[in-house]
Length: 130
Image 1 (cartoon, helix red, strand yellow):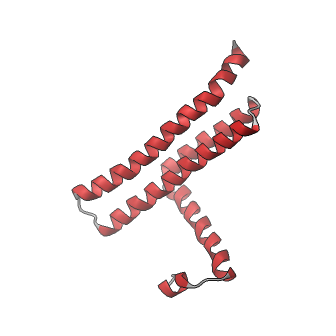
Image 2: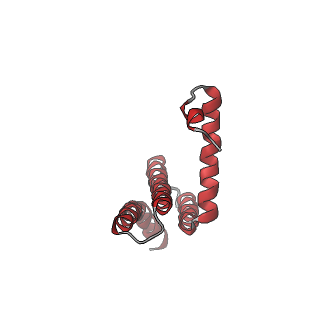
Image 3: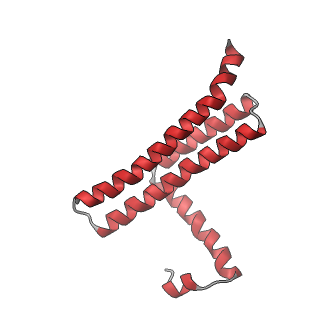
């Protein structure tokens, strides 16, 4: 268990420990959240498609940014859901509101990624097959 005093400490030891906490967070997210696995599968497919279709460095940059945005939004959504559940197990309209808004942010980023992916991959797929 980490105390508040430990969190306030600075220095190389604390900096290195922060990586450990981040990795633990990713492990928990992939262990407990089905949506993280869905995003991972889509990420793998996008990377395979990127190599197969020989996308440019600029296109890779866009694809990587979109992937990271969706994964980051999903992690924030999961954190918000956990905090809301920590505060109350009973139904509360504000709890629903917070969870719905956090989920909507993931949806928005996912739609951005879908559109960005389509702009990059569809023309290359058309050229490859037609």
